Amino acid sequence: MTEQNTAQPVKGEAKSLPRVSPATDILEREDGFYIYMDIPGVRREDLKIDINENELVVTGRAMQGAADKESFLEVQFGPGEYIRAVSLSDLVDREHIKATLKDGVLVVHLPRLEKAAPRRIPIQTS
Amino acid sequence: MVLDFNTLYSFPGRFDRMFEEFFKPQLADGRRMAYPPLNLSEDDTAYYVRSEVPGLSLEALELTLTDKSLVIKGERPTEQGKYFRQERPAGFFQRIVALNVPVDRDGVRATLVDGVLTVVLPKCEECKPRKISIEVA
Image (cartoon, helix red, strand yellow):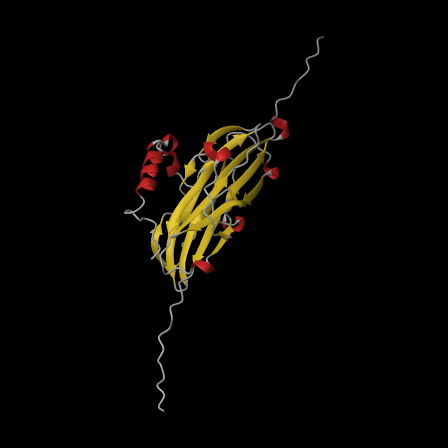
């Protein structure tokens, strides 16, 4: 799911959609960092995660498909384009970033880079 | 550390965001204070109640249909860990939709796709407008 290109966020027909910065939690656990993002209404195929340099960019489109013949009485959310950039530190193992999307929440797991364990060098006697 | 408030080296982005927030009229009126946001709509056959409830399964939501209202209840869980940033709301929530119209109570359905809840309340047959033919004596 992680693409290593420098693709621009979705443009063109999505230009008229309002841009929304999704609510994001960033937290740390034993096995690395976790990013939780609320992106309700975004399907898996409409979601993009890009890494360029030290920034992780999440873009997604929520279409909130409603039939045209419906008339709205109250509108508190609508279609939108979610964009959020999170900068990554050098501690993150970029090759093993994992992302899952479930029930409108994107979870990105950023494992810590394995540091070379300190080791003792045996000394041989001739 | 993973931080997304790198204040010092993303000035262009921050500037854009400032502008966007400035020109966001619909968020200013305090409507978004109620959680979760609801959309209500109707067509010829039914009323639709839609709500954004990301992170919850249909089992974790409690939908109650009373005589005069539809109640949406639930709890958003908190993740364990050391937080660097917390923006997602957590905890119990409840919203009550007053139904001042008769609905077909047995035909109410709820679906949850990608964190968007849709409750379909069909209009009852008896209350649809009908044409009554008047016979002239």
